[in-house]
Amino acid sequence: MNRQIQAALRSALVCPGYGQWWLGRRGRGAAIMIPTLIVAIYFISDIMEQIMAATLPLQERMMEGQIPDLADIVRLSHEIVAGQALSINPSLYLLIVLWVAGTVDAWLVGRQPPAVQAGQAGAPED
Image (cartoon, rainbow, N blue to C red; front, side):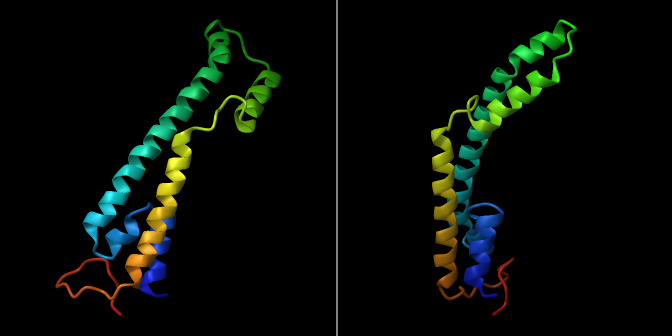
């Protein structure tokens, strides 16, 4: 497998920017990785807040010593999965754009001939 494909796969499957990092373009990789991680953390925290708000009635019943019915748990799970309890967050779209852009950029950087650098860690030998 050539460098171009390896870099794109590393960015697509591990984290956007990791392909650039692996190719020795540390600054470029960090410039893609950091915003992606910030958006991902924001997205996950927002989803968790929505889940906590959706499960609040069940939590209150459990704090009162009542055991929730299985039907309530199934209904709530269905609402969350079906998207009724979770709204599509604009940060999801930004996360997708960053992921695709990072993967495409890694593929383009991988097309360039490897820089001759002594001790370049992580880059494969051609």
